[in-house]
Structures are given as C-alpha cells and as structure tokens.
Length: 362
Image 1 (cartoon, rainbow, N blue to C red):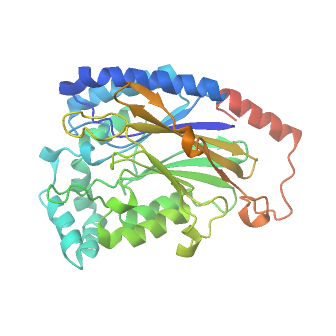
Image 2: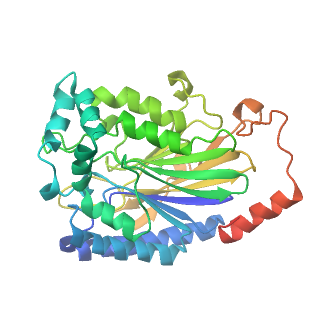
C-alpha cells in the first residue's frame, strides 16, 4: 500500500485513570507498530476522532499532549490529525444558551434554524467555541488552527493527488439532557466543502467528525448525511464505543456526484472504562490506500479489537473481512482524473510517488 492511516478514538484521558489505562495504551501502540511492520505498510498518519480528554479540562490535555507525542515517536507518525468530541467540552465554560440550542433542536421543529442563526452570529459562535477552549488551545500547541466556522483542513500531496484531512466539530452544542446527540450544522459543512473544492486538481478527502450519523440530532441527520457524502471519501467517527467499518454504496442515491469509491465509514473506540462500560469492546482500524497518480485505486481496512480477558489485540479472520477491500473501477466514471482518456504514468511520476512513500514528501 502507498499510504497508511491509523484510526483511534475515545481515549477519555484524565489523571484519575491514568495508571489504569496506561497498560492498554502501551499494548495498543505495540500492537499497531507490529501490524504495520507485518503488513509492510509505510509509516502512518494517525487520526484521533474525538474524546481525547475526559472532561475538557486544561490539565487533562497535558496528559493528552504526552500521549500523542508518544504515539508520534513510537509509530514514526508522519502526521497527527484530531477532531473534538463531547468529552472535549468543558462544562464550566459552556455558554448559557448552549444547552437551550440542543434541547430546541431535539424537541422543536424550528430548532435547527435557530441553531444555525446563532452559529452565524460572530459573538454567539465565539461563545460556543469557548466551551471547548482547552481543546482548541491543544490544537494550537500542535500547530493546528481552526477556521471561523470551527473546522480545520490539513493537506498533504501524494504524487498527483491532494489528500485533505477535514476536521469537523460536532460537539460545540451540548446538553446534559441529550448528551448522546451532536450537531455539525449546514454552515460548517458548506464552508468545509468549499475549502477543499478544487476543480483543477484531483483530491481525496478524509473527514473526522466525532458523532456518527445516528448520533446527530434527528432533525439534521438527512442534511448531514447528504453534505458529508458530497465531499468525503472516508469518514472517521467515534462516540458510540463500537469499532466497525461500513461502505456507503447508497451515497449516489443521495445525490453524491463525487468521482471515486463510495464513502468508507470507520468507527473506533480505544480505551475502556471497566466500571462504567464493562461490555464495550475496544478497537482501532488501519486504513491503507493505493494511489494511481490521479485517483485512488483501492481502499483497505484492517479492523482490530481488544480481548479484555486475554488482554491482547486480535482480528477476526472467520468473517473473511480482514482486510475489507473497496475496489475502484477502472472506467472513466470512477476516475479522479478529468482526462477521460486516462492518465499516462510517466517515469518522473513513478519517482515522485516512490519518494513520497519513503519520506512523506513529494
């Protein structure tokens, strides 16, 4: 494979459970490193799809800082990407109207319109962002700055393809009454889609959004699905504490016109809390991509889970889905190239991709 991404989520890091989770975190990084070597994959990019901390407090992010630096060093990570989750919300910093907005979206017909109106106001949007102030400080310490609409895009060139990481915030509106639900919002998604739109160059978009579609407020699920599928090639979620992978073959029925493979959705859960969720299974995913210069030829996902009794990571070969492979047809309709005749690979391009695989630069 030309590219490797490790998908992790829901660490819930805090001082009171630091010793308790340290053992599983060490075994996690050891297992990831071993599998990358066994599969012959290049040094990975690492995506953490939310709930980095337990309560969104500044002191918890010092623990997160240490953990992600350990991941970077142990895995020789080329890039680290993050999005915020509901546990990255600091309740003591929430705006007074924050819970009101979520309650209205769940309970009232016009709730989504009200939330979009408040989000469109610079002052109100700033107040909503402040509820996750320590998370955004964490991003800035790691060289990542969000846009005004609370998302950020981090990009890397892979030969002729621009690979975009799109980090969305689905947790900026929060209510204890409906703490399962999240909301991304039309304005944020339209702005993110516009930021990665480039008609002159082929691209591949990996979107991080903590809440999966079933956890988005019900009145906004259809629009959220439509928008995410319109620009995302892979969607990384957390939140539901259930590792799983699926392919959205129905995306074109919802109006997706983007060329390339159907969207792949991956959920991950990496650290368990024995006292509060004893039945939950921890798991992570390894995602591999093969590039063909102006398109992605195939997507492979290796799903790995943790056996609490044996205290070891494993994959289930009996299902015949390790790895799960999403192939891309060779016809022009699935090509990322605007050249319908097909893109002729030159010796210089082969050298460019070879350099990228070795160094991560091209």
